[in-house]
Image 1 (cartoon, rainbow, N blue to C red):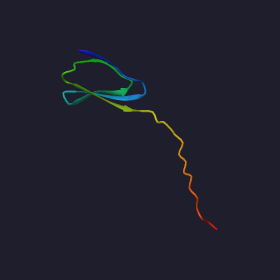
Image 2 (cartoon, rainbow, N blue to C red):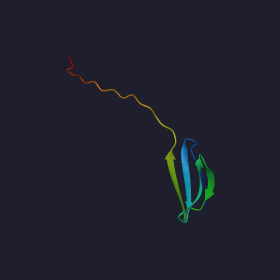
Image 3 (cartoon, rainbow, N blue to C red):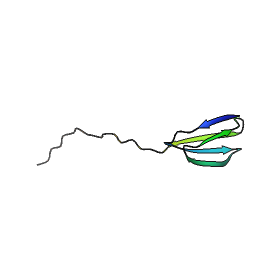
Image 4 (cartoon, rainbow, N blue to C red):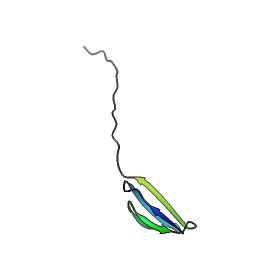
Length: 59
């Protein structure tokens, strides 16, 4: 038996024996390692600068 504490910025899905049991942001729960799978999906976006330095020949 183990304890999982999820990050609040991740959407978690807990599967037990291949069936979805819980889903949500930042879940915390006890689980059996033998029959449980956990999927973590980032829920926040990170913006970054996007610049092209190209020249055009417009008249």
